[in-house]
Amino acid sequence: MTGILRIAVVDGKLTGDATVENYTIPFTKIELKEGNKLLIEMKTDNDHYKVDVKVEGNKFSGMGSSYQGEAPISGEKLPE
Image (tube, rainbow, N blue to C red; front, top):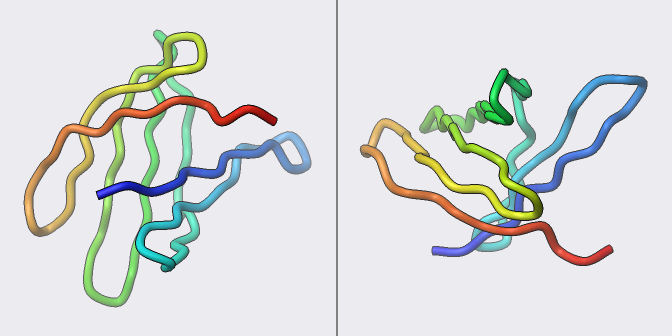
């Protein structure tokens, strides 16, 4: 499965959303933690998603989880 995570800084705070299979889910929580770790949470009517990744340069990797289980997640920043 592929998707796009959009992250921005608005009024000094991180915000964003994820688009997977033409469905966009806004982040309910996004935090940049020590060690370049990024924690993201999203909720839909049927599920609660958590993404915990480490950012290294333009790439990230880690784990994504939902009620259905866990899966590895990785990606890279798209050119602007």
